[in-house]
Length: 287
Image (cartoon, rainbow, N blue to C red):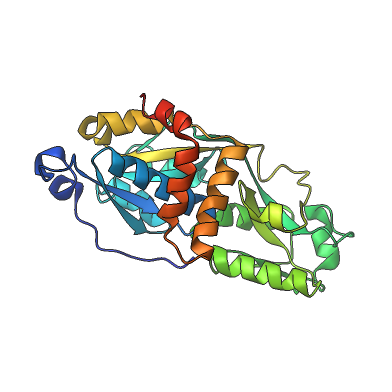
């Protein structure tokens, strides 16, 4: 969930209010994006939906820490993926007075943990890791350094007394390393989460977490800058109406991934999914 892309963003007071929007659209929405597969899928879905309703949508590829700061400074309108109560708890605590965190959730069955290939039969719990640290080079292969999950993994290492180093890269780099290790039947441990298409493509297992360091099932919320609900009340309500189950989010990710594999824009995959789920999205948009 890191390559951090720092973009120069226009202040919302200058670029995203209805008064300043061009006559032929309702305004410009500055949306945070992260290079996680589910995030790419849902942001492109919302881009299609909002542009069909007359808005312009700009993406800003930023890590979650930078998105929180940008929301606080009115440089972003929406950050669509906040994991609570555990993974992004640190950001909620830090910004709860300056950023609006939705009470509503759009996905209620999220899971996070340490994952290994199923052929690693001797490692079934986080407690087993120290007994096999040489086989794993004392390394947990991670993704974005600023991601809430990466911060939780650092806590897990401390809580379980693991003699391991957590390495940071990016989600694509982590998945490439995971796939390469499986191709060679080598040992590897990574932090992963549901929803994620990789569980349907690779034979993986979560390690038991007897200390419950990762918490129970996570829920995914969204966050907006203060005042967004007043500037864009209909979008604010649409985001609150947004709900997806396992089948819906997995199918959306598959459509977007297939489009990218065919050198198409992710929006094409998202648009195909919307066409097949029009009744659902009409409920979100109260049509």
